[in-house]
Amino acid sequence: MGQFAGFYDRDVKKTGFEEKLVKMGPMIYGDIAHVLVIYTAYLPDFTKEPQEGVDSFHLNRKDGRWWIVSILNEIPTKERPRPAVPR
Image (cartoon, rainbow, N blue to C red; front, top):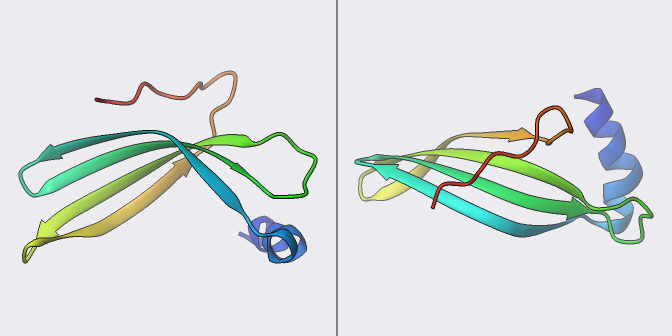
């Protein structure tokens, strides 16, 4: 957590942060849903290549609307490439 806070204070506060949606795949069953999101993220004015990431959103429908239950994030690696996204 400290590493992220340092990154935020040092870089994100100065330049902002941009994320582009690459692909999204929802899976809905009754009142539960899982949405897998593939994205690329980068800092404007930063020389590093954009980084690909995977977000996993878990939702529950209650009282006629969807509520976010949890959000998880992973960064693909050579040993653990990004997953296939459901249609």
